[in-house]
Length: 325
Image 1 (cartoon, rainbow, N blue to C red):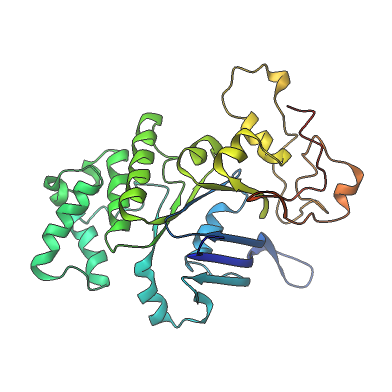
Image 2 (cartoon, helix red, strand yellow):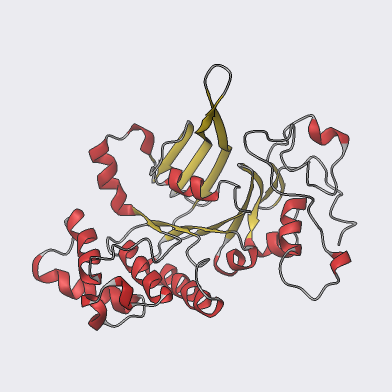
């Protein structure tokens, strides 16, 4: 088992509902008993439909939101026991790239001001060392140093996302959460940003939690993939194995949803929409949409179990995908 840089144990998170119940406001469960591990320099892809809890998990790992239960351990240190000042110091090692490159940058600040703010917050590259660092960051993400004096509205979406990546890299983090970092970009720009992230991982050794709803994008950049559905982990394994030989019917359905020349009848279709987290199905949360569900699926929540080298799935059946191949 590789050394763990990030470890999440039994993490659960719920939000307060705006609607009042009979005696009190009810809570909406978003994540349920999630475990994950990320090794130094590893990219773990997190995939699932909208509403599965991906972004909530990413923010919880960084302690941008507080979990209801569970432990978040970074480099052997439990983040739950840190004071506000200790957590602030730790944030140098943990950064985030947001989904929307238009909303994540202050429209009143130049690129130089945005990048300098990150450095000054953590006391890095002060004085005469700052400008060379800013120029190096721009070069690192494929932009000219001449752009440092420009405002965000003077850039395209892809360029803005590169600036967001430069800001995340400014403080030399060891771990980055990339939250749908390419979903707002055109397909051609997506490929450029994905290649950039892969190159940065190779050059800096930074670990990542790469969040996306697109399994093919996740496979391209990730070492391992975790599949999330309605707040529960469905499958975990090496990226190519999960994509080309999915073990869980939900993963197989995600693969089937990708553009393909296969006839529609050969694909695995899902019934309806993802259920409300306020009223999830009993037993397996995926059973209400699963084409292979049996009566036992509504009786017990399936545990995530080892099914092969580095591969795990949460499903009570072992035979369901053989006939669907």
